[in-house]
Image (cartoon, rainbow, N blue to C red; front, top):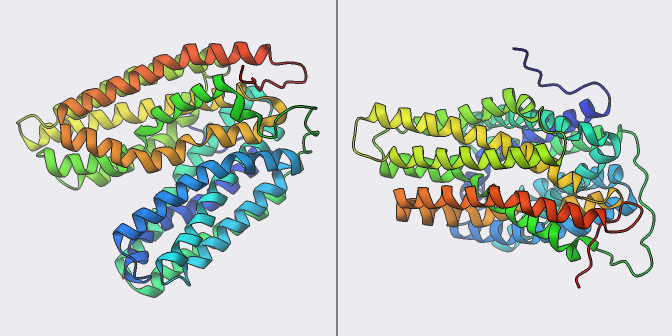
Length: 414
């Protein structure tokens, strides 16, 4: 079996290089940022949590107009500018020593990150034919995980040193990684901006596209799986099972390596909306099975048995993750008008910051408070959302096909 991580030469490979560069910095940042803000900046955990929640909430809203800006001004320049803005916000973290300074910097950081994600999707759409986009995105996801793993290892060195200088070096690395990302993006071919709006068309048409909003909502529910391995499962292992604590790290590595090696292969069958619906539907079944396996790991028994069940649950979880990712990429692009990719991707991408802000509260409430029934309820919710995606996509597809000439499918509220 041949495993190919690098995408084909040309624009896809340069997009992957940009993805890899900033993900290395982000990996180091994610590992070290909390301790830096507490030990160096002098913030409390409550202040950090509040600031991040506000920032990602604002960022999720800002992603739509920034995506629309990429449509109007051209996604290459917009993406590069937002990468530079992200680098600037990271450098600002080096200077903050108060909550208000932190809040300002993290607001810029989250807003630029959400806008960068939307504009980079618009850039990809302008450079890659529709039938190849899901495959290229799978390559980018593999590069993302590889970069995060490398960055996390570098961040681990800073944690081992546990000095202010080491933490500052991590933030400088993250800022430089985004500057490199901007430089790589500027070397891509320019994608021309879209023409002006038609008479009477709203500036942010996606906000009136109810079928697309339903698809986005269901996708956001499915993305609640994101904090599982970083928060819910580690706490579950420590508080509810007899498995060894080191298994937390092993499961995270398992997930990262699996996505890096197999995401491209899992995305290969997804090339249209029918295959995307099937991928999401199957992902829901696999995710429900994963939740059930995680649940029974808390039953009385030997530690090795609990560990085996947790590994099995993690394997099912990453399988579901890769299927759902491939299906959602295809759906998000296929249902967006060709001349509104930026704003539509900005809206579709709100599921990620929503999962980052609401996911921890939802998952800890379900799993740690309710225990085994909470796992089963989570699996049922994700299964229902995955099966609901099929009818929602068909409705949005029908509305898109009747939405007018020129590829505009923004459905006006009636």
